[in-house]
Image (tube, rainbow, N blue to C red; front, side):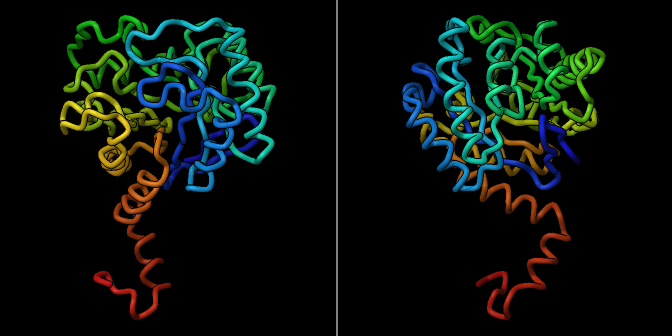
Length: 293
């Protein structure tokens, strides 16, 4: 499967790791860590060295209860970071709901717009269509301020899949290339822990849409509730489990804070799922490289 971006195409068949860079003071697990542009740029470069295929730069927190950020402030946070990472050769996604920020980041070299409102404005669709950028359309029930206030669904998998397919159709009707569209069920965005588990288990339904499926579980609260791990920064191991299970169920892009653990999990999952990959590895291995060695 090929995902068409602004100036290139990415083969997602073996999975892609997207490193998260929050240039914010208040993101739920790393708020303030990368607010300084130099630290954000350094983090992006380190993620690439650790095996990230692309990095996602955001300047406005979307954690539950988060308040909006003015467009000028958000632009000032992200554009210098995007420009520097692009200059260093990285594939960069801009995480924003604002068409003005998306446009500025694309002009700075970003390849993808990651929009948690699923391109909820006509102006955003215009920006996407005019630039040829890749787009991630995400499902969110409500807004960051309200989304966790008793979310209710009759059938969360069917409703999320239907919403994303409808939004994909609308952006395509607005001039976006269908090959540029990826979809994200929005784990934790207006969902209970049970909803999140149902969506991960139900990923094959989203895969049926034909669009690459993005999975963003990294360090989220439901992982802590299930495992008892209270510190978000200590949830990278269980995040990696969802990366492996997500790949087995058909997701192909994984948005994570810790690249190393999910890169390893993805490599193993891809080897198990793809018998050809295992066969090539075994044929190239020396006699000492037995499965138990």
